[in-house]
Image 1 (cartoon, rainbow, N blue to C red):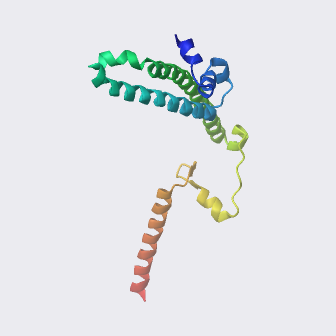
Image 2 (cartoon, rainbow, N blue to C red):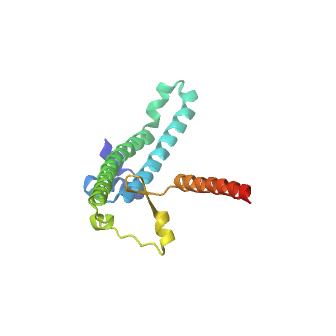
Image 3 (cartoon, rainbow, N blue to C red):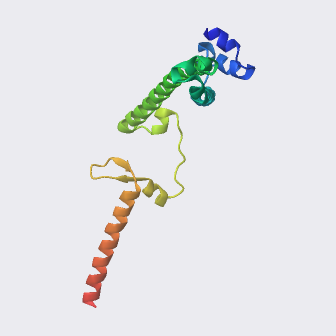
Length: 180
């Protein structure tokens, strides 16, 4: 039955279903899978909408939802074909997302290992970073905590440092005002 429904699809939609076969999905990247997923979802939504509207319009004429259901079979069957295709693409997209997450995790772990052993992070991950233009930029890029380990500067830490410096400046100004 599904093959008869697939064969009755317009050419553009038939080609869309063909793109969801296992061999075709294997060569797609994560971004391409997302695009295909969107196109399949739109086609499925179109047929679901057509089925629901048609069935709702026939309910009063047929005398009930159960009697109106068999008359809406074409759009319902097409929606089911696209639902199956959407499931195939969703599984492939999930697998691709897991693969890319695992790659990113491995990259982060190797960078952390390299930082811990004293190597530069770019030598461990293959990613090169641009050196800061001057010392002031270099100072704002990293700070040293009490234990000596480098940590990244966040907006919050910058604000805290500026607040402490301003507080110290106010104290010093108060002392200077008393002595003069």
